[in-house]
Length: 348
Ligand SMILES: [Zn+2]
Ligand SMILES: [Zn+2]
Image (tube, rainbow, N blue to C red; front, side, top):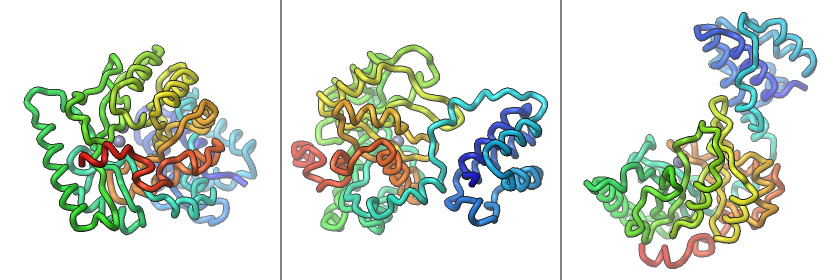
């Protein structure tokens, strides 16, 4: 049976083989439509909406290939004038939506108590804090750590420190009204700077759950072990977000000595994130298994920027399953006070 993942990759390869233009774009759109389709096409025989008209015959033809060999042969025949396969490395090791749907993690996902790593309008999220919180409550979570970005928090004008105070008031308001159903925990997604320090002054970390992540230098080929190690030693860091910094079809992520990074995370008690945002899926199952072997504990994050993204923690659970990480090693399955230091909570 041809999997959606195979079909999508075939279309990405065709896109790779075309010069920039309408055909390339059409193949890319078709590939994403199939990658994000929750049912395997081989079973439904219905193409997802969103496949551009100009590539519809090609897509139909590819779905009728008898197997992977026939598909590869078809791609070789259909490849456009450029040929070459430049993007493959940044597209390997990702689960398609259909693979996630049939991985059978839904019963486990319903046991998740806490949601971690999502964004509201206080940074680049699409929805107000209350909308995200209400969506989480509807989905059955008991606690949630809000982690908006800190860009510029270290700036002297203090505007963002002020935003943090305003957000804290919104969190307190929510907890006063609905805290017994869903308790919100103030947190941030802090930026790991070039030297491995955070863009969040220590004085502002008090009472915040700090999730630290790299968002710069992600296409550099230099080794970034030292940068990550310094970040793991920064006071108050609770979790390391999307450690590799890979992005589907864009970049394979940073280079580092992952044995050292994960061993340090384990010994410093910093959680390692399994980021389930479909275009990230960071860590991948191979690195997640290595982190597990080295004694790390994990947090699953959806990195939601919209209520409909909250389901992305399923992608992270599929990665955990593939890496052999048991629910006991994932803090989202715990009660809030077993997941987050009481010290942090008592100051909130
Ligand atoms: Zn991030
Ligand atoms: Zn994020």
